[in-house]
Amino acid sequence: MALNFITTDANKVDFGSAANLDNLDPFTFWGWIRPTSLVDNTKIYAKHTTNINHRFRLTGTTGNMSFFRLRAGGQLHYRTDDDPLSVNNWNFVAVTFDTANAAGELVNIYTGGLTALAAESTYNLTDDFSGALDDDSAENFVVGNGPGSTSAFIGDIAVFGFIARELTLDELISLQFNPRVVADTRVFSHLGFNGTGTQPDWSGNGSDGTVTGTTIVDHVPLVSPFGYNVPIVLVAGASVQMAFPSADVTLGGWTPSAGGSPTELWPMIDEATADDSDFIQSVLTPSNDTSEVRLQTLSDPSVSTGHVVRYRYAKDIAQGRVDLTVKLMDGVTEIASFTHSDIPAVLTQANQTLSAAQADAISNYGNLRLRFTANQP
Image (cartoon, rainbow, N blue to C red; front, side, top):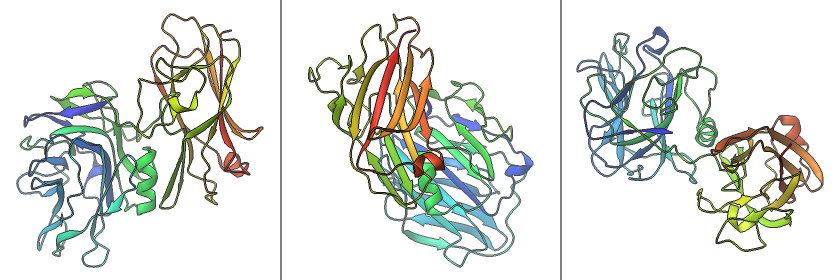
Protein backbone atom coordinates (compact mmCIF):
# COMPACT_ATOMS: atom_id res chain seq x y z
CA MET A 1 0.00 0.00 0.00
CA ALA A 2 0.94 3.67 -0.36
CA LEU A 3 -0.67 6.97 0.62
CA ASN A 4 -2.19 9.41 -1.83
CA PHE A 5 -1.78 13.08 -0.97
CA ILE A 6 -4.52 15.05 -2.70
CA THR A 7 -4.81 18.74 -3.49
CA THR A 8 -5.45 19.91 0.02
CA ASP A 9 -2.98 21.58 2.32
CA ALA A 10 -4.04 19.37 5.23
CA ASN A 11 -2.58 16.12 3.86
CA LYS A 12 0.62 14.99 5.62
CA VAL A 13 2.31 12.34 7.76
CA ASP A 14 3.98 13.81 10.84
CA PHE A 15 6.80 11.73 12.38
CA GLY A 16 7.44 14.13 15.26
CA SER A 17 10.71 15.61 16.45
CA ALA A 18 12.66 13.00 18.38
CA ALA A 19 16.14 14.16 19.34
CA ASN A 20 17.75 11.72 16.89
CA LEU A 21 16.02 13.53 13.99
CA ASP A 22 17.36 16.97 14.87
CA ASN A 23 20.09 18.96 13.11
CA LEU A 24 21.48 16.01 11.17
CA ASP A 25 24.70 16.63 9.26
CA PRO A 26 25.35 14.52 7.28
CA PHE A 27 22.11 12.78 6.28
CA THR A 28 20.27 11.08 3.42
CA PHE A 29 16.57 11.10 2.58
CA TRP A 30 15.32 8.58 -0.01
CA GLY A 31 11.88 7.45 -1.11
CA TRP A 32 9.53 6.29 -3.86
CA ILE A 33 7.05 8.95 -5.02
CA ARG A 34 4.49 9.17 -7.82
CA PRO A 35 3.54 12.80 -8.54
CA THR A 36 0.20 13.15 -10.32
CA SER A 37 0.70 16.87 -10.80
CA LEU A 38 3.92 18.90 -10.87
CA VAL A 39 3.17 21.91 -8.70
CA ASP A 40 5.79 24.40 -7.54
CA ASN A 41 6.72 24.37 -3.83
CA THR A 42 4.90 21.13 -2.97
CA LYS A 43 6.90 19.23 -0.36
CA ILE A 44 8.36 15.74 -0.48
CA TYR A 45 9.47 16.21 3.12
CA ALA A 46 10.21 19.14 5.41
CA LYS A 47 11.47 20.00 8.87
CA HIS A 48 10.92 23.71 9.05
CA THR A 49 8.64 26.64 9.82
CA THR A 50 8.68 30.05 8.17
CA ASN A 51 12.08 30.80 9.70
CA ILE A 52 13.64 27.33 9.79
CA ASN A 53 14.25 26.31 6.19
CA HIS A 54 14.94 22.58 5.85
CA ARG A 55 12.92 21.13 3.00
CA PHE A 56 13.01 18.99 -0.14
CA ARG A 57 10.37 20.02 -2.65
CA LEU A 58 9.26 20.30 -6.25
CA THR A 59 10.36 23.40 -8.12
CA GLY A 60 8.43 24.79 -11.07
CA THR A 61 6.10 22.64 -13.15
CA THR A 62 8.48 20.61 -15.34
CA GLY A 63 9.75 18.04 -12.83
CA ASN A 64 12.63 19.79 -11.07
CA MET A 65 13.40 19.66 -7.34
CA SER A 66 15.07 21.92 -4.79
CA PHE A 67 16.69 21.36 -1.40
CA PHE A 68 16.97 24.15 1.20
CA ARG A 69 18.80 24.37 4.54
CA LEU A 70 19.17 27.63 6.43
CA ARG A 71 22.70 28.55 7.61
CA ALA A 72 24.06 31.53 9.52
CA GLY A 73 25.36 33.05 6.29
CA GLY A 74 22.23 32.52 4.23
CA GLN A 75 19.87 29.90 2.82
CA LEU A 76 21.66 26.98 1.21
CA HIS A 77 19.79 26.08 -1.99
CA TYR A 78 20.43 23.41 -4.65
CA ARG A 79 18.06 23.26 -7.65
CA THR A 80 17.97 20.69 -10.46
CA ASP A 81 17.59 21.73 -14.10
CA ASP A 82 17.21 18.38 -15.92
CA ASP A 83 13.48 17.80 -15.16
CA PRO A 84 14.18 14.44 -13.46
CA LEU A 85 10.66 13.71 -12.17
CA SER A 86 8.15 11.93 -14.39
CA VAL A 87 4.49 12.74 -13.76
CA ASN A 88 2.08 9.82 -13.17
CA ASN A 89 5.03 7.42 -12.86
CA TRP A 90 6.90 6.03 -9.88
CA ASN A 91 10.15 7.90 -9.22
CA PHE A 92 12.90 6.94 -6.81
CA VAL A 93 14.25 10.17 -5.30
CA ALA A 94 17.06 10.86 -2.87
CA VAL A 95 18.91 13.84 -1.45
CA THR A 96 22.19 13.68 0.48
CA PHE A 97 23.66 16.46 2.61
CA ASP A 98 27.11 16.92 4.18
CA THR A 99 28.66 20.30 5.01
CA ALA A 100 32.09 18.64 5.13
CA ASN A 101 32.03 18.14 1.36
CA ALA A 102 33.73 20.41 -1.15
CA ALA A 103 31.98 23.55 -2.38
CA GLY A 104 29.19 22.74 -4.80
CA GLU A 105 28.99 19.17 -3.43
CA LEU A 106 27.24 19.72 -0.11
CA VAL A 107 24.00 18.44 -1.63
CA ASN A 108 23.41 15.69 -4.19
CA ILE A 109 19.97 14.97 -5.67
CA TYR A 110 19.27 11.63 -7.37
CA THR A 111 16.36 10.18 -9.33
CA GLY A 112 15.62 6.75 -10.80
CA GLY A 113 12.70 4.65 -12.00
CA LEU A 114 11.30 1.14 -11.88
CA THR A 115 13.87 -0.01 -14.45
CA ALA A 116 16.26 2.98 -14.59
CA LEU A 117 19.10 3.14 -12.08
CA ALA A 118 19.27 6.19 -9.85
CA ALA A 119 21.57 8.88 -11.19
CA GLU A 120 22.53 12.35 -10.03
CA SER A 121 20.79 15.37 -11.51
CA THR A 122 22.41 18.44 -12.97
CA TYR A 123 21.88 21.81 -11.31
CA ASN A 124 21.37 25.44 -12.23
CA LEU A 125 21.82 26.59 -8.64
CA THR A 126 24.29 25.42 -5.97
CA ASP A 127 24.33 28.10 -3.28
CA ASP A 128 26.26 26.74 -0.27
CA PHE A 129 26.61 29.86 1.90
CA SER A 130 28.47 29.31 5.17
CA GLY A 131 28.17 29.23 8.93
CA ALA A 132 26.32 27.09 11.44
CA LEU A 133 23.10 25.35 10.52
CA ASP A 134 19.95 26.92 11.91
CA ASP A 135 18.57 24.84 14.76
CA ASP A 136 15.68 22.64 13.57
CA SER A 137 15.21 20.72 16.84
CA ALA A 138 11.85 22.34 17.61
CA GLU A 139 10.42 21.34 14.22
CA ASN A 140 8.65 18.10 13.33
CA PHE A 141 9.77 15.81 10.53
CA VAL A 142 6.88 15.72 8.05
CA VAL A 143 6.50 13.69 4.85
CA GLY A 144 4.25 14.89 2.03
CA ASN A 145 3.97 18.45 3.36
CA GLY A 146 5.52 20.98 5.68
CA PRO A 147 4.78 21.13 9.42
CA GLY A 148 2.59 24.16 8.73
CA SER A 149 0.43 22.13 6.29
CA THR A 150 0.63 24.74 3.56
CA SER A 151 2.00 22.88 0.53
CA ALA A 152 1.02 19.21 0.28
CA PHE A 153 2.67 16.95 -2.28
CA ILE A 154 0.19 15.96 -4.99
CA GLY A 155 0.39 12.24 -5.71
CA ASP A 156 1.47 9.01 -3.99
CA ILE A 157 4.31 8.26 -1.59
CA ALA A 158 5.05 4.59 -0.89
CA VAL A 159 8.16 4.19 1.24
CA PHE A 160 11.03 6.33 2.53
CA GLY A 161 14.07 6.36 4.78
CA PHE A 162 15.86 9.13 6.69
CA ILE A 163 19.46 8.20 7.51
CA ALA A 164 22.10 9.94 9.61
CA ARG A 165 24.91 9.64 7.08
CA GLU A 166 25.59 10.41 3.44
CA LEU A 167 24.92 7.35 1.31
CA THR A 168 26.90 6.60 -1.83
CA LEU A 169 25.18 6.16 -5.16
CA ASP A 170 25.78 2.40 -4.98
CA GLU A 171 24.06 2.26 -1.60
CA LEU A 172 21.11 4.25 -2.95
CA ILE A 173 20.72 1.92 -5.93
CA SER A 174 20.63 -1.01 -3.53
CA LEU A 175 17.82 0.68 -1.57
CA GLN A 176 16.05 1.66 -4.78
CA PHE A 177 15.27 -1.98 -5.60
CA ASN A 178 15.25 -3.35 -2.05
CA PRO A 179 13.87 -0.77 0.44
CA ARG A 180 14.97 -1.64 3.97
CA VAL A 181 16.55 -0.43 7.19
CA VAL A 182 20.31 0.14 6.88
CA ALA A 183 22.91 1.40 9.34
CA ASP A 184 22.10 4.77 10.95
CA THR A 185 18.47 4.81 9.75
CA ARG A 186 16.45 7.17 11.93
CA VAL A 187 13.04 6.66 10.30
CA PHE A 188 11.87 3.99 7.83
CA SER A 189 8.22 3.59 6.91
CA HIS A 190 6.03 1.92 4.29
CA LEU A 191 3.23 4.48 4.05
CA GLY A 192 -0.21 2.91 3.99
CA PHE A 193 0.94 -0.31 5.68
CA ASN A 194 -1.47 0.51 8.51
CA GLY A 195 -4.07 2.13 6.29
CA THR A 196 -4.48 5.76 7.23
CA GLY A 197 -3.82 5.02 10.89
CA THR A 198 -0.51 5.43 12.69
CA GLN A 199 2.36 4.74 10.27
CA PRO A 200 4.91 2.40 11.90
CA ASP A 201 8.56 3.42 11.99
CA TRP A 202 10.41 0.17 11.21
CA SER A 203 13.82 1.63 12.09
CA GLY A 204 13.35 0.64 15.73
CA ASN A 205 13.49 4.26 16.90
CA GLY A 206 9.77 4.60 17.55
CA SER A 207 9.12 7.74 15.49
CA ASP A 208 5.70 6.58 14.23
CA GLY A 209 3.81 8.88 11.88
CA THR A 210 0.44 10.57 12.45
CA VAL A 211 -1.67 10.88 9.31
CA THR A 212 -3.80 13.86 8.36
CA GLY A 213 -5.97 13.35 5.30
CA THR A 214 -4.65 11.03 2.53
CA THR A 215 -6.19 7.87 1.06
CA ILE A 216 -4.87 4.37 0.38
CA VAL A 217 -3.50 3.46 -3.06
CA ASP A 218 -1.39 0.64 -4.50
CA HIS A 219 2.25 0.35 -3.46
CA VAL A 220 5.14 0.96 -5.84
CA PRO A 221 5.41 -2.32 -7.83
CA LEU A 222 8.93 -3.31 -6.83
CA VAL A 223 8.32 -6.87 -5.70
CA SER A 224 7.21 -9.39 -8.27
CA PRO A 225 3.98 -11.32 -7.70
CA PHE A 226 4.17 -15.12 -7.72
CA GLY A 227 4.18 -16.05 -11.36
CA TYR A 228 4.82 -12.50 -12.51
CA ASN A 229 7.57 -10.04 -13.20
CA VAL A 230 11.31 -10.17 -12.50
CA PRO A 231 12.03 -13.33 -10.46
CA ILE A 232 15.69 -12.54 -9.78
CA VAL A 233 17.53 -9.26 -9.45
CA LEU A 234 21.30 -8.86 -9.02
CA VAL A 235 22.68 -5.62 -7.63
CA ALA A 236 26.45 -5.21 -7.84
CA GLY A 237 27.78 -1.69 -7.40
CA ALA A 238 26.11 0.56 -9.97
CA SER A 239 25.05 -2.45 -12.06
CA VAL A 240 21.60 -3.99 -11.82
CA GLN A 241 20.67 -7.12 -13.75
CA MET A 242 17.20 -8.62 -13.98
CA ALA A 243 16.49 -12.14 -15.24
CA PHE A 244 13.11 -13.02 -16.74
CA PRO A 245 11.75 -16.51 -17.48
CA SER A 246 12.67 -17.51 -21.02
CA ALA A 247 11.67 -21.19 -21.36
CA ASP A 248 9.78 -23.97 -19.63
CA VAL A 249 11.71 -26.88 -18.13
CA THR A 250 8.90 -28.81 -16.42
CA LEU A 251 5.16 -28.16 -16.63
CA GLY A 252 3.79 -30.66 -14.13
CA GLY A 253 0.10 -29.92 -13.70
CA TRP A 254 0.67 -26.18 -13.87
CA THR A 255 -1.18 -24.16 -16.48
CA PRO A 256 -1.20 -20.57 -17.69
CA SER A 257 -4.06 -18.28 -16.82
CA ALA A 258 -6.98 -17.76 -19.19
CA GLY A 259 -5.87 -16.34 -22.50
CA GLY A 260 -2.41 -17.85 -22.37
CA SER A 261 -0.86 -20.60 -24.42
CA PRO A 262 -2.34 -23.98 -23.51
CA THR A 263 1.14 -25.42 -22.95
CA GLU A 264 3.64 -22.63 -22.19
CA LEU A 265 4.07 -21.12 -18.70
CA TRP A 266 6.99 -18.73 -19.10
CA PRO A 267 5.23 -16.12 -21.34
CA MET A 268 2.79 -15.54 -18.46
CA ILE A 269 5.60 -14.51 -16.10
CA ASP A 270 8.15 -12.65 -18.22
CA GLU A 271 6.87 -9.06 -18.17
CA ALA A 272 9.01 -6.15 -16.95
CA THR A 273 6.05 -4.53 -15.22
CA ALA A 274 3.80 -6.67 -13.05
CA ASP A 275 0.50 -7.56 -14.73
CA ASP A 276 -1.96 -9.36 -12.51
CA SER A 277 -4.11 -10.34 -15.49
CA ASP A 278 -1.82 -13.26 -16.39
CA PHE A 279 -0.16 -15.82 -14.13
CA ILE A 280 0.56 -19.52 -13.69
CA GLN A 281 -1.36 -21.93 -11.46
CA SER A 282 -1.11 -25.46 -10.14
CA VAL A 283 -3.88 -28.06 -10.28
CA LEU A 284 -6.82 -27.39 -7.97
CA THR A 285 -5.85 -29.92 -5.28
CA PRO A 286 -2.08 -30.18 -5.74
CA SER A 287 -0.02 -33.11 -4.53
CA ASN A 288 3.58 -31.92 -4.82
CA ASP A 289 2.68 -30.44 -8.20
CA THR A 290 5.94 -29.05 -9.61
CA SER A 291 6.78 -26.74 -12.50
CA GLU A 292 10.11 -25.20 -13.45
CA VAL A 293 11.13 -22.32 -15.70
CA ARG A 294 14.54 -21.34 -17.01
CA LEU A 295 15.74 -17.76 -16.47
CA GLN A 296 17.60 -15.55 -18.87
CA THR A 297 21.40 -15.57 -18.74
CA LEU A 298 23.03 -13.20 -16.26
CA SER A 299 26.63 -12.05 -16.09
CA ASP A 300 28.52 -13.24 -13.03
CA PRO A 301 28.52 -10.15 -10.77
CA SER A 302 31.67 -11.38 -8.98
CA VAL A 303 30.19 -10.47 -5.60
CA SER A 304 28.28 -12.45 -2.98
CA THR A 305 25.76 -9.72 -2.16
CA GLY A 306 22.69 -8.22 -3.82
CA HIS A 307 21.13 -11.47 -5.09
CA VAL A 308 17.35 -11.11 -4.66
CA VAL A 309 14.56 -13.49 -5.71
CA ARG A 310 11.17 -11.77 -5.88
CA TYR A 311 7.68 -13.19 -6.30
CA ARG A 312 4.14 -13.03 -4.96
CA TYR A 313 1.82 -15.92 -4.27
CA ALA A 314 -1.75 -16.87 -3.27
CA LYS A 315 -4.14 -19.80 -3.29
CA ASP A 316 -7.60 -20.09 -4.78
CA ILE A 317 -10.04 -18.58 -2.30
CA ALA A 318 -12.09 -21.80 -2.16
CA GLN A 319 -9.15 -24.05 -1.29
CA GLY A 320 -8.17 -25.48 2.07
CA ARG A 321 -4.56 -25.46 3.18
CA VAL A 322 -1.98 -25.20 0.38
CA ASP A 323 1.78 -25.11 0.92
CA LEU A 324 4.20 -23.62 -1.58
CA THR A 325 7.93 -24.18 -2.02
CA VAL A 326 9.98 -22.02 -4.37
CA LYS A 327 13.50 -23.14 -5.22
CA LEU A 328 16.27 -21.37 -7.06
CA MET A 329 18.19 -23.95 -9.05
CA ASP A 330 21.51 -23.91 -10.90
CA GLY A 331 20.69 -26.68 -13.33
CA VAL A 332 19.93 -29.65 -11.09
CA THR A 333 21.69 -28.11 -8.06
CA GLU A 334 19.53 -26.44 -5.45
CA ILE A 335 20.84 -22.99 -4.49
CA ALA A 336 18.05 -21.84 -2.17
CA SER A 337 14.63 -23.01 -1.03
CA PHE A 338 11.79 -20.87 0.31
CA THR A 339 8.83 -22.59 1.98
CA HIS A 340 5.44 -20.96 2.57
CA SER A 341 3.00 -22.97 4.69
CA ASP A 342 -0.76 -22.54 4.49
CA ILE A 343 -0.56 -19.69 2.02
CA PRO A 344 -3.29 -17.04 2.11
CA ALA A 345 -6.00 -16.34 -0.45
CA VAL A 346 -4.66 -12.85 -1.11
CA LEU A 347 -1.46 -12.11 -3.01
CA THR A 348 1.47 -11.99 -0.61
CA GLN A 349 4.86 -10.64 -1.57
CA ALA A 350 8.18 -12.38 -0.98
CA ASN A 351 11.54 -10.71 -1.37
CA GLN A 352 14.25 -13.30 -0.78
CA THR A 353 17.87 -12.18 -0.44
CA LEU A 354 20.41 -14.96 -0.90
CA SER A 355 23.06 -15.47 1.73
CA ALA A 356 26.69 -15.06 0.70
CA ALA A 357 27.10 -18.83 0.80
CA GLN A 358 24.08 -19.35 -1.45
CA ALA A 359 25.27 -16.74 -3.94
CA ASP A 360 28.76 -18.26 -3.98
CA ALA A 361 27.22 -21.67 -4.74
CA ILE A 362 26.01 -20.45 -8.15
CA SER A 363 28.45 -21.79 -10.75
CA ASN A 364 26.56 -21.00 -13.95
CA TYR A 365 24.54 -17.77 -14.24
CA GLY A 366 23.37 -19.00 -17.63
CA ASN A 367 21.52 -22.00 -16.19
CA LEU A 368 19.43 -20.54 -13.35
CA ARG A 369 15.90 -21.81 -12.89
CA LEU A 370 12.92 -21.33 -10.61
CA ARG A 371 11.05 -24.40 -9.40
CA PHE A 372 7.53 -24.09 -7.93
CA THR A 373 5.95 -26.91 -5.91
CA ALA A 374 2.38 -26.67 -4.60
CA ASN A 375 1.03 -29.23 -2.16
CA GLN A 376 -2.22 -29.72 -0.26
CA PRO A 377 -1.38 -31.82 2.86
